[in-house]
Image 1 (cartoon, rainbow, N blue to C red):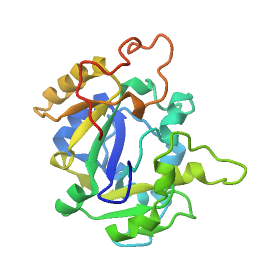
Image 2 (cartoon, helix red, strand yellow; image 1 turned 135 degrees about the vertical axis):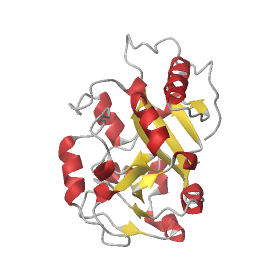
Image 3 (cartoon, rainbow, N blue to C red; image 1 turned 90 degrees about the vertical axis):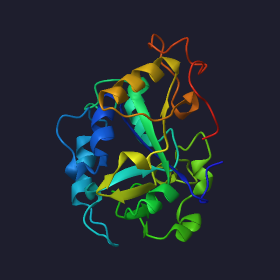
Length: 231
């Protein structure tokens, strides 16, 4: 169950970006180098460079490393649907970097939370952990289908609520990685070895959308070969 009691935080990226992240940490967009496998919409990233953060430590949204509170985000759905032209791979090459709010706080990192997609001018910002119980729509974080309905036209944007960490998230802050299937476990460990890093790798196919026919992971979608747990 996803909830406000020390919530899990997740950020997905292409596995080829892992060596750089293991070496330098997860960087805010305004700090990132150009030699990364991009997963986001350029137009949205540009809006994040202009969207101000009205609470300390301030700046703009692109000054922060973003995390979601739940997997299977609308952004991932857009990638699967081919609506992110900048992204040149598929969802099976995406890995989740996972941590908890307590680890962010213990590391002394500044953070803010939004109740929906941070780029929206209707987004509200919170800066205290005790605020999150009412700030985030935890009910929508726990459902599999989060599409808008005639009765509720903001479900999608609320599913995209964010925990924004200012600047850089050092590698030791992450607790584990999540991949779609067993075939990706060894590949991810190889990427980490390039940077002399290690981290637990967990297989969670339910954090992804349905595997397309012909995918290299087809037939391995039972999760065998990697660790699984309730995280």
